[in-house]
Length: 491
Image 1 (cartoon, rainbow, N blue to C red):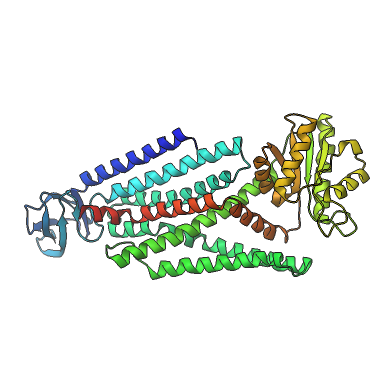
Image 2: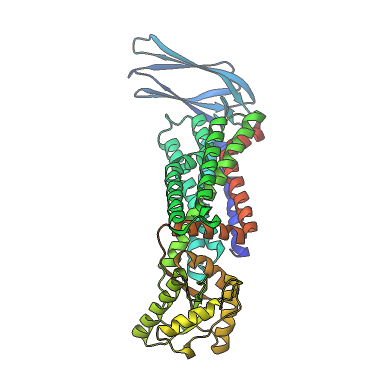
């Protein structure tokens, strides 16, 4: 996001906060009480202990609901007694509000967060949440078109999902508060608003359990087919981490059930619950975002105008021939080469990329070259890159070869489908605008490999990721506890 855009967004949020504060104070001079009764013809008498503090500005009876609007006049405390009489002038019910406080700002509090301006606090939070969602929708769409292979693409999509879910729940609460005020107890509305992140977590819990179960099952199948290796246990470890994280969120939600209240214990409890739930929900959104970006990258169809096809290397057999995983990458590159030749008549060159490991008899690039020649590709179309030991070096050294033969060449890289997005990140770091194609892999291999890719994404940009986790957690904690801050400021 450009500097001017950041300044504009910041000013927008400041304006929303100022408008929310002003509307809260102005509207806070009034508070409406709803009393339900089963009688059609009624009379209501309102008695106020100190009419210099508060007055009954309006008293209405609609069907089976009595509506009493109180107006603050002066700082102080008072009690309000509302008595309902039937058509025969017989007292049917009496409701007493004994803890009514009027503050210097004009906001009426009955108990906890029950004040007339709460609807504007909720509206302000909702507007900021929806605005955040719209901003990241626009940002992700722009990033998708201009620079898809970027870790910021994953962040933008994660925040889009995060604020989208949050906005949906806030909009529901706001709708109930506006259109069904007789059922919208401010105490309950604010309490629910404080639980938005916990609600999001609980809604995602069934999907999370299914995902963890599938990940664990695929990992066991991988061990069965590929053998017991440390990296083959990765999915089981992630499943355990997801399970423990889910348990932690449930524990804090049960341990700290209230968002309301101004005591130190209640505020700390609300902060702990919101922070833990927010961080976990953000992590879920980040994981889902990484999966979506990976699937999108794998489904992308590049144009048939490529000058070079880079084939990213991986482990080869003891006899120097490609392992099935590497052979799949080569075959995918060959399939694209022949399709492009058929569609456009343009002949692409190959850059097999990969150095020689300590336990390998030849370099991965040489192994791939031998396979390509065996498949009928002429040697003068193959430019092996034999120095690289990492994916970033694959891209850097392959770019050097491509640039030496043609400036501003159209470059395509071939890898395994789950590896396309992360490889694209490295191609961007190498200063190369390249598209990617991926070879399919077995179902039980993909989830474990995808999770390794996800952790790789987190590790490669851990500083910015920690910053965004802090940002989203702090913002959600502020949203959830804003009414408490309002009460603390005005009392």
